[in-house]
Structure formats: structure tokens, C-alpha cells
Length: 317
Image (cartoon, rainbow, N blue to C red; front, side, top):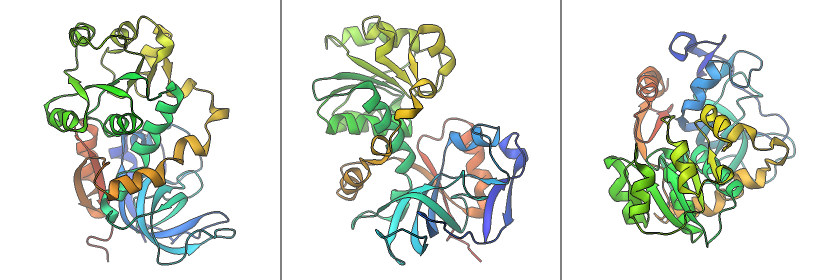
């Protein structure tokens, strides 16, 4: 099968190769799918550079949708031929989702009404957003500011918070501002002066802030917006700034309590909402597997404005 993977750490454009590899076998508690679509993310490039080091070679592409081809020992909730979406076993296999076949470590049924391409855009954004909102302690009484609501994680977080009944203030540019307003969020521009713009809204106390935007100096103002309480600010992007301010960040949340329920428990609910047209992760572009470098180049600009998906079935040999 074809797969995009790396044999040494380094810059993604230098170390990644499209090559041929054996079709993987699913071990116990795993399944193998014929990949319909695979989502790419900045996390893939961080893996290339050495984040979470492990055995090499290693693949990219965590978000996957496809048709079940084989099931490992102990798997009873799916059968060959089922449509599923989920996460590739990138740590336990020498290839991942950017391939003709992939082994999944978590999977969920794709409900009727949700196509496989849109399903592949869901896993990482949905998992990341729901986990961070749970860590912040979001409730239906919360007012939360989501910084970087035009990112895939931010866009998902806005929708999850609204579904949970929270009041949402979202920072975003013009690309998604109108869509976010239609969802029910109050939208403000990002950048310097954010705290003043939020005060001008007259919304009262902002309880929580979730930062999903690329690092850009917003964290001090987010701390100000939540009343000077840095522990009510959680970032998944600006780890360096968080340390200096006393704000919370992804990597310093207690890993011992990162349960599968927090990370994946909402998947069936939001897959159903996606099938009903009530939840989405924007897709910026789709590419045949052979054009993975084009997707990489767009992603590295940090201005993809949505999920980038590889479609291995397009042009498969």
C-alpha cells in the first residue's frame, strides 16, 4: 500500500516520503480500514520534528474515515464493511492515516446523513475541543471566550459550548465571523485591544477563556478578561506564554486523568449532530494522496482556514 511517513526526525518537507509499505494487521483491540479520507494537522508536523518520539518509521494523519476491512481480537462493536471514523494508531504502527489502509485505536460509527469526507474532519478538532472545555469546567451558566474561533479546534469549541448552553464570545477574522454569529456566538476581532473590545460588549463577567489561536501575545489580555485569574485560562497553543503568566496549558494538565471518556465520549453525540447539519468542522481543501506535499505547504502557512484532507481513494492504483 501507499503511505506518507518519515524515517528520521526533521522538517516535514525534508523527512516525509510517499512510499510503499506492507498492509498493516490490526492487533488486539484494533481495526483496519480502507481509508476514504485522512485529516492533516499541525500536530503531524510536530511529530515529524520529534514530538512524542517513538519507533521509526512513523506515519502522519491521525483523523481517519473509511470502511472496516479487518478486526483484531476482542473487537465486537464493528464488522467488516461498516463505515467508521476515528483516530489512527500512530504510535503503535509504522504508518498512520495518510495511507491506503490504516489501523485505528478509537473508532465510531458514521451515522446516516454524514458522508465519509466530512466525518474525517471531526476527530482531532472534536476531541481537543471537548477535552479542553471539560478541563475548564464549562457549564450551561458559563460565559466563555474562545480565542481563535476560526481554527478547526476553536470552531468546534464554539459549537460544543453553545450546545451545552454556555454564552460564547469568539475572536475571529472575517473568514468565519458571519458563520460564528449565525451559530449564536458574539464575535469580536482578535489582536491588540481585545480586553477593551470585550468590555465594550457589556456582557459582564467572562468566566473562562480557551485559547486555540497560533501564538501571538493574546494570553495576557485573556487573563485580564477573566478578571485576572490565570487558572481560568487554558491554551492548547501558546505553552511558552502560559508558563510565564501562570495560565494553564495542554501539556501541564494532569496526564493521569486524561480519560477516554473526556477525549472521545462526545463523539457519537456530535457525529449525530453533524449528520443533522448541526455541527461541522470546516474543510479547507481535499487532495489525492499523491498531492500530500501541496496540503503540507498550505498547512505550514498556518492560514489553511479549515481542515485539510487527503483522499487516498482518489487516484489509488
